[in-house]
Image (cartoon, each protein chain N blue to C red):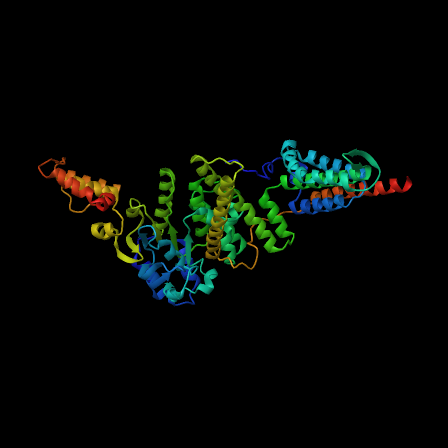
Length: 259
Length: 340
């Protein structure tokens, strides 16, 4: 079974991989917020380059990241098109009477660049540690327990559900079912999804019973034994990355003031 | 302490002795020779289907009991009642563990008394990493960190999964998952261990590995209740068999229960293959008063018979041999029985 695993390359060696999980989450989250509030296209481009630089340092295979960024592009590209056509300003071209404006293209590109930078950062962060480590780090960073638990169970059972769905799908294919764009196929697809929901509901019930059989009371996040050791180099790396990022923004501000 | 003095040959496990010495303030623990007592348990599903009716039995400390019954007989439902996860008005006060009535409101206090291993290991392994799953129970019981670590290590070693601490559950094989699920319960060091079909869906090697683990637990003197369809494994694993079909149909030693063909047939069950085979041998004239239940028993039986027969076993065919073979085999062929 092939799973779309986000932490497939978590065992590689790089400074980003060895970065303390909590410090990594804090640093990257800070960077993401810093980058998405940028309003200048040149600065956004520089930020994107910085994000790509971090990605290169992390040694994650580029294809792994690109495959995932592609999916995000599906959602972001329409914005570029819509913005180009709707924002008012100086006309670049006219397509069947609808004008494409310079401001629109600029604004659209800004959004695309910001999104790409943020997603690249996010993938670098998630790709460089095991997902269970991410969850534990979030828990230690005092992220609300119910959120952490939801994330934990989603991660654990998404593969089980995927297997279950694949099994049903294969069983259907073995009996001659092919997905076509007709009413029958759609209603069958609906049945499968419905069955999946029923099965998940029943499984959730069994898992809950197993949990309370093992002393769970639902009041707090299940504790684990993992501990992380923040070392001096983790603090140093945090300060380094954040300062570089902040300096980039300030430098741009100084430049724009002078211009 | 009666259970321990009654069976001095059984090596006392560390957990067992600790559990008893750890609770000197509860005199009830020592006054009861039985570990688990089910008394008039009833359960009806919300849709009106009766699942359990007047179920009563007792299990002694250190006893290993197999619970058999056809599909839908209420075996899994019964297991879920043992720690109060499932409960209804018909089950109130019906279950006692070491003299203490199981209270559905205090299920979270039960794990060190009774551990239940569910049939589907995917329901038991819900944490992102195997070690977290094994540590889950002990941490909930409020056990100290280094003790939790010891238990995780010991439990994984017990089921042969040392070194699997950091493995992700969805990367384990079916057999590994079954053993991992058992480890998550062993780590709570429960006094009574209840397992739901531990050997189903396993390949022969994984099955025999699991049977070995269960045998070891039995030899350590743990109290076991094993729900199973695997009749061939029962003679090795259990001293006693309870047949459940909504209510307790039969309850006795393994031999007693397997001798009652009519009852087994009515419950849709059968006896171990080796026992059937020796019935066939009898039809061929093999002298055998007590049918062996397991391969080991068969070896002993054959050795004895050959020794008594001056180094030979005499088998022969006479006029009625084939009709006797047919009748010996026919007993367990439910489908033919139903077709007639």
